[in-house]
Length: 473
Image (tube, rainbow, N blue to C red; front, side, top):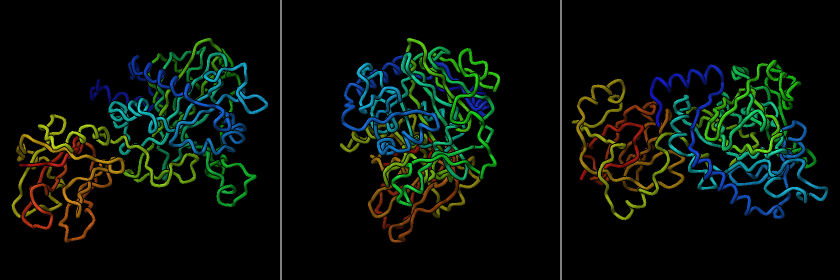
């Protein structure tokens, strides 16, 4: 259920103050069980003999020797790959006979949110998108997901780190993690620990592709390296990439250094700022502690660039899924409409019209929204929704009729609306920066050929609900 404005404001204040946020019951028990059951199916279908086993560890030395020397790790960005615990492999490079296939796994990543329908459904759900927007992300995109097992009795620790070290953006870091507990997470089975307020510290190091290997061609070099930022002006903490002294239960050393345990129940979500210092201990209990984790960053709509040196890179031309409100879940209805079905206007996509004598001037959208809104009248009873393909969904909404000219609207702050006659041969015009919730003028060509030049109808469309092209018949 959507949070009230007061609750939303308090959640954002708490997140900005502490660098993390614990949300009780974010996912239902049914959602958690559905994801766990789906992962069981994926593990059952996994053939460990089909590829060279890749171990996963967060120890700084292991990261360079294991992940840093593995094509399988690098190729996992938009795929479903399986990574085993470092102690689960025998001398022949196979899973130890004493360990079952399922119990050998450390995690599965890093493209569950794009490659699997069950995990994609949760990852790109409206409640995830609304939470991210509530916390201040305007053009969020999802580069990474992973399923962490933290196996009973054998699940290893995750050393102290900042997520932005591994998912780096410029000119500022923008990473945020969404850590969903699929089991209860306790002190005994390896709950999260975080150091409140540490998100206000700079990113200390980044995990990047090694130019000596990729550009210099030195195949003896590791593929991935750690680099300290700011020429060492931001020195790492003594426990960077390892466990702080005194971490062993009862973990007095962690508390002395300012860490707090974040115990939670299945279905709870921990929101993690990309710069907060956090870790988890090994699972020494007989109970599982499985989690599904998402990592997002701001996209190009906010002037943010995904570092080309990041270890995680999608294939050329493939964009990260967008979490902008309204950017997903249009295809099923589009398929109905391809069959010629015209649906009544939906309450969620209220579209209004306004005709202006003398044509449309861009400045009419600046500073006059209240006056214009007072004049609008309902367009009518029918809205024709447009089918959008995957490329259009990730890059924005393409709205207008005819193949000669398309009108483009991007949800967010970069690109607003453009409309022009076909013979002008112009790109869509950038009018102004808009935010979700603003209103935009949209010129309708649905009842005329693009080459004609009569005064066109104009529609005021709330940005949050732009999903349709209007058929005013």
